[in-house]
Length: 91
Image (cartoon, rainbow, N blue to C red; front, side, top):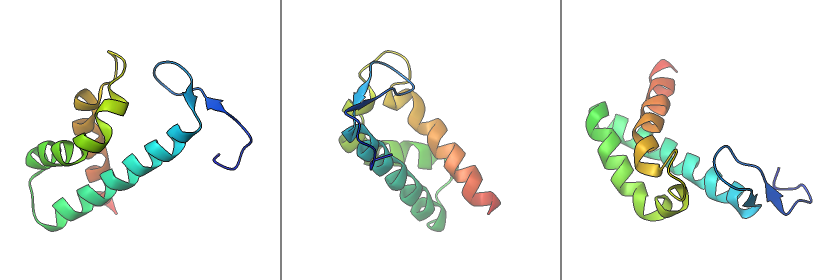
């Protein structure tokens, strides 16, 4: 998608976003998966992992993912951690 000649995209929440949002969100997913892998390898329990990864990534992603009342960063990061954890655990 980053190769497409577009200026904006329609995201799942809120107003259309600039093309740079693709990079922002890809980086979030990469950091999220890396964080879950590291925390899992360290034996951190899932509930602690949700808070730790949420706090670790918050400075970089919270403002950009909390512009609208629905789906704010702190409301979703724990669920995202759990989804990634369950995928990693199954593989």
